Length: 354
Length: 284
Image 1 (tube, rainbow over the protein chains, first blue to last red):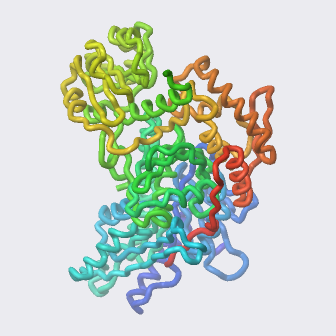
Image 2 (cartoon, each protein chain N blue to C red):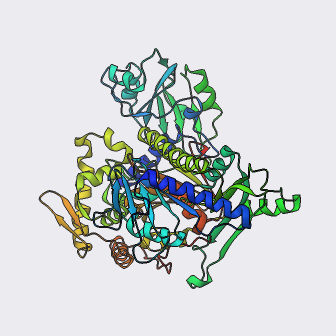
């Protein structure tokens, strides 16, 4: 057991070694490793000071650093939680993403005050541009839960992922991709750069960042670059949230959503008033102002009260004065997955997280 | 014929929301005060002459005072007094202390028509459609230009967190209170009528004095008592301290049952949903 990292220093040394090995494997065989680094960013509400529960599989092995070793068998399902930052936690693992997601959901985000980080499409794109990475593809996933079908199985579903190489697509291919981007908000963005190794013609960095707040690193020839990026995404997100929350304290300005596909307001009502379904909103409609239906209730991710006004093509979210603004990017992501395939998000007239 | 009380409170809620929107900017519109550089108004400030306008907002060079009202036959004497008041030291500290001149006479913000016949020593803005302005005394040229070119709000404005006002009656706060109870039930615990009143007042809560809240708190307490009877499976009311104790409801079945009970109490249809609680999957 002692061979596994138990401190930050040991973890980052192990990450460096693994990324180096993965890059070598790619350079020698042309195939990516199946043991890829995954990082999950979690948003923490300081009001509740959450911590992994004592006695849970998360063992504190350093100050604000927790190790979760999978002792059941010889697997890669070990996870590490860096809870140093008061607003953003970082979970590192080489485990299968679905396994890691399930552990995080049942053991961490189930706690009051812990939520995922929700990376809106514009935020994903701004990361890519800031790092100067090439776009290597994108994914989207939509299940139209507002459709009036008679059963869950009949609901309209659209999902796709585009893997792009390092060469520029043709104009025809670009037109096809542009139409997909106009119709759906991205659930993930793949990005990367060519290798600086002149003897290797492949990627020097290739990674995919997901709207649901995690990243998979397919390969990286420079671990420092990836570790820096992980921190940069977390700190940029925390900074943006903090700025909007500070402004919210001064004025009850709403976050405004634009729905590119019209919402069926009665179906929306049926879902959110019963508190069922994957939106995890439990609301009560209290007023109808023309096409605008006004709701108040709770966001079940955090149990915080919120006000949501919804029209077929736009909506307003106002969190309480000292409320957590993570509700805004969360609703944005939920909308793109379940309500309106393409959704935009504005605060004070400017796109949020752009 | 005078409006019944509930209609007046509903209209006051509307005019307050629109007054907030004057200082806001959306994806495809902006309020005229926002356009002239006025942001984040102070609600219910008290001036150095003891008067109490509804809003104060500043730019680097000017300060503007606003009165928010849906009454077309208002006694304007109080509003005129604002025009004689200056910012106190506390207000100057709050908005940043620097020399500022008046943006003009106080601005009367209303949803009513007929503002063109208002007294000429007041400015007036009709925020409901069709929007219009009456600007006999505006000193801030930027603000005048912004107001004169303003065509009104292109779509309904946000709630700006306002679910009720001190004068709201029981019927008006019943449905918002149902939403608040859903929220509180998701955690469980005890809530007092005064706290629920603050939820309803949203960002106005800090600006409304305790005596002014009395009627609203009483109405909330009445509703909480009724909730104790109508939703007795999940809540219980204690008359001694006007508090409601809520069981924690954290399962889909529990939420559905509580929602159904609330719908019956509110006499609104309960819409069934077949959506599952399964989280969405992502493809690698």
